[in-house]
Structure formats: structure tokens, C-alpha cells
Image (cartoon, rainbow, N blue to C red; front, side, top):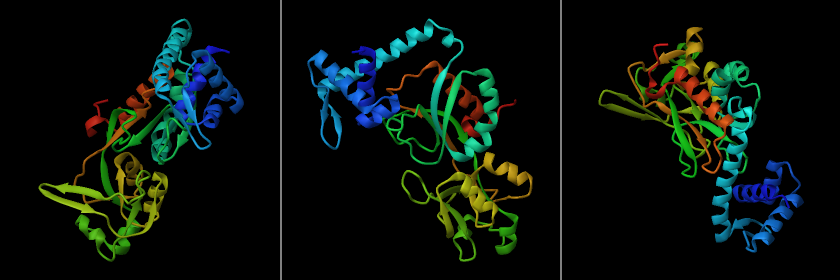
Amino acid sequence: MDRFDAMQAFARVVETGSFTKAAQTLHMGRATVTQLVQQLEARLRVRLLHRTTRQVNVTADGAAYYERVVRLLAELDDAETSLSDASTQPRGRLRVDVPSPFARMILVPALPAFHERYPDIQLDLGVSDRVVDLIGDHVDCVVRGGAVTDQSLVARHVGDLLLGAYASPGYLQRVGTPAHPREVEDSQHRIVGFRSARTGKLVPWVLHRGEERAEVLGRHVLTVDDGNAYLAAGLAGLGVLWLPHYMAQPHEARGELAAVFAEWRSAPMPMYVAFPPSRHVSAKLRVFIDWIVALLHEHAPVGGRRSAA
């Protein structure tokens, strides 16, 4: 039995809750993972996992052992890194999940510079607005807008997105320009509805003008759960949008969108990088997070203020 492989297999089973998922993420056969864990239990003379036909749960002894295994695996990774040029040239595979508009408009266009600097890092990029199971899907980190409600994750606040209301000129010519946010709830106006991937419910707008507050849900003929589709619907004239400035500005500059409710403000949307606390922050993950921070400092700086540069 290779004790390193056995500990890694055990840790992955705990994290995924499944021998099958652990085997998939480790690129091993399920039987191999099962055998490694059984050999580890035989060596330790304790039961680490409770197995049923439907699920796998860690025992009390297994939970205590898992905490020490995770630290040990991280220390081994650090030791190997310190003895190689990986400490100065990070390498390896990273699985990252990011929102679709952020990927299309900010991250992917900037990737050539990232890969020129870190040519040995392979990015497996998931592009979605869905809720990702970081452990089950074996994702190293996610970039997300809005509050991170999963208390099991480490979340780093890396920027704020300024928001505003926009509509296409064709839409405004057809139904008129609303002067007050509550007018989008009138019969002639429509919004494009955005459904939260976490709750499945429409996300309301909350705006302020001095002491006045307006919370608007609006009427809609379309709801979506993807940022790129949401923007496309607004450009097609299907209703008023509530967009981060970075998404709207190129289209506003080309005359494809026009701002409405300019006197109204809303709280910026916080941006976070989140990762599991048990996931070792390797050199490759550390430099990727630092790069994301630099990107957002340029496009969506913390506090919503652009740097002088």
C-alpha cells in the first residue's frame, strides 16, 4: 500500500462523500480507491468511514484523522514545491468557475498575459452563473458576485461592481423613458427578470435617492439565470436591465444601451473569490487569486473607485 495514495484517496472520499466521485477526481478506478481506504483502515485498525448502499459518512475517528491528513498532504506539497522551481514558476492544473459575463468580457481577454507569465498553469474554466459544489465537483476556487452564504468556504472580498439601470434605445422609443424606478411596474413597461441560481427567485432592485428608497421587482415577459443571456435580452429590447457598469459601458458607448434613473444609486455588488478551507492554497492557486484581484482592481475596485492608473 502506498500510504500517500491511501491518505489522498481517503481525504477525497470524505470531501466528495462518495467512492465513485473520489475515483473520478483522482483519475483512478473505484475499486482502487475502495481498496486503498480498506488497506488504510486495516493498517490503522480503526473504521474511518460508515458505508451504506446510499451514502458514505465519516466516523468520529475518521473525522479526526482527516483533519491531520489534510494538513500533512499540504505540508508534503509545500516540501516538494520548495525543492523545485515550482516555487518561482507555479505549474499544474487549476479548476476554476466564474460568471459567464465576467469570463467573456474581463477574464478570457486577459488570459494571454496570464499564460505568458505562468505558461505551466493549465486552467480548466467553468463558465456559469450556477451554484457550484466545490468539493463534489473538485473545483479549486470560484469567482462570484453577491454575498457568499456557504459558511464552509473561505471567501476573500476582491472587488465591488457598480450597478445601474439600462435599456435599449429601441425599447425607450417604443414605450418611453421611465422617470422613476416604480414606473417599470406600470403596465406599459417591462424588465428582464434575473433568477438567482441559489434561490431560483427573481432578484429585486433596491435603489436610493437621498432618503427615498425604492425596491422594484417589475413586470417581465422573460426571466433568465445567465448573465450573457440577460444582457442579450436587454439589447434585443425586451425590457429594462440592472447591470454592472463593466457590462453596460461598451454597449452604451456604441449607442446600444442608454442609462436610466441616473439620479438613483444602489449598493455595489461585492465580488468574492471562494475556496474550500481544506483545499491547500498552492502556489498556482495563490498566483491565480492574486491575478484575479489585480483584474478586479482595474475593472471593479473595492469600494467602487477606479485607481488613478
